[in-house]
Every structure is written in C-alpha cells, then in structure tokens.
Image (tube, rainbow, N blue to C red; front, side):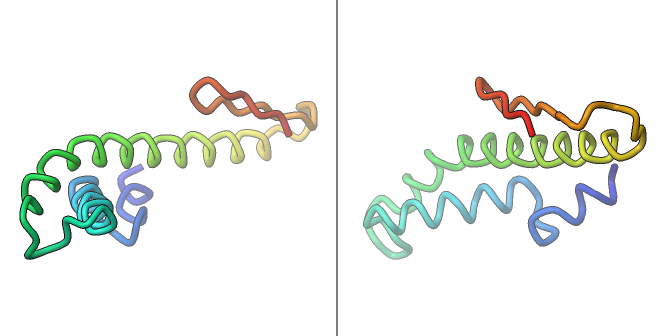
Length: 91
C-alpha cells in the first residue's frame, strides 16, 4: 500500500499536489506569483485542493483494488459496478 501511494502523482505528497493545484487555480484567476493577494488566494484554496487530491487518490486505489478483485475470481459475473460519490458505473 505504501508503495502504491508513493507512486501516485509523480511522488508528490498530498500537500505538494494541493499546493500546485492552488497555485494553478490562482494564476488562472489572475492572482499569479507576484500579484496582489497571491499568497492569500493560495492559502485559501490549498485546504480544499488537498482534500480533493486525497479523494482522487483514494478513488484510484479503490478502482485498482476492484479491478484486481475482478481478475482474481474468474467465476464472478462480467458486470462490475464502481461507486464514485453519488454516481455508480457498471461495466
């Protein structure tokens, strides 16, 4: 499990990925580095960006585990359902 987490997102921690996403969103909104309110924008958005990154990583692990589980027991039905938030997809 630790190995999988280390491989995600180019070995970025959740905090680093959240920081990068907040920087990108702030720059797209006109608050890039060196602009007024840049630091405030990044500080404000970083916690939400980190939470979204953690959810994305958890979903990747769940989807991978579901794919492995589907391949372990070939007698299982060919339909696999994966729930992502309020959406359930069946393949």
